[in-house]
Length: 533
Image (tube, rainbow, N blue to C red):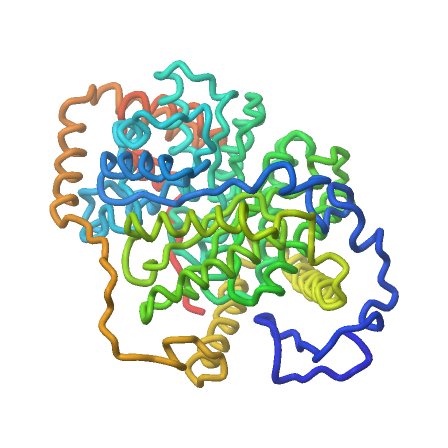
């Protein structure tokens, strides 16, 4: 990245050496129009609109969900009252893995890392009184995408709200579950099919505000992926979904504008900002050159950002407010469209009201008080930033091509390639922390033995039993003949390879449980079993 030799002891998180100073020599053969251009114009390095935050700030989101549906509903109303303009629903691990609360594998996990969603009845309680038509509402559905969508569409129908008018969103990317989060259910190939059913159904039914294919690298980064790996793997995963949708006869410009990227920003401020800039440029080029998209909306990538809680420490937790500010600032400087700031107590427990409020205020202070939104892409033209953005792009392209040569994302997942590469990167990162080479304030430097003074949110242990009784009561009181008939339609649709959303709506209306629907699909698709790496 220039004529002077960099000091190899100082690198970015991706291992890119950082020089003492950058000059025009670091941008030799660098073309302004090709690499940078004007905000709102190809290749969109500087942002997807001409004025970016001058006209509208990013959407300030809060991620929540715990214990019972009623408690989550109260929590959503609280954060809306604090000024949140978007909500993301966290589901507990049994729900994400397709198990009802009374399944033996769910024991001890019900309502712990999110709220339980056993049936349409739970979703009705979660969203009671929430203005769905006026707020972008998202859910981490992933492996259960068609089931969640079937429930949501049924709820909207019961409320008389046309789904075409609802700005619904969904994290519906199952490929990243393999090796990183583990909330997969079916093997990779049928999982991709299930994911694409959701996008196909929404686009063919003209849900133009729906953004139901949110491709995610956040959990890769939390598992230890470098920014280079994040960019390459997220684009490879996107390619797999796009190719499946094209095989179904869809036009690239009919669905690409409704795809999102969900990424995480860490503590390397400049590399994280450059990561978003490089990703946006690579997306535009991939859509134009590989998939021959014609619409400018297909070339612009909406980026949803979440600050990386893995950088937050249980020691001296109030320090995490500063970490959240830096990570949020990286997203702003990189030009994201929606942001969630982690709460300072994330390393200890589910967030308290105070910590959630401070997380939201962090975004509001940056937006309204800091001046960082006054001009578009304030980092643009920096010798360091442009050199680093280009270096990230070059390295990510090489890794993307490596995945392509393996046969694409599905083949790479099946071979455990992603998992192995990220495990290596995560191990190296952990070694640097353990040795003290990477300083973590309050952990391996400036540590103290002062007792923790913040209040910890705790889940009522009785909530799990209440949820178990709730789902068992539902099974007794519903029309079980109607449920059996609905599940038969789900099984037939899976066997015939048709879109699963319509039969899932029928099953949701009958109050079939999520576990029953997933068990029906398991009998057709089988289950994925993790392999050792």
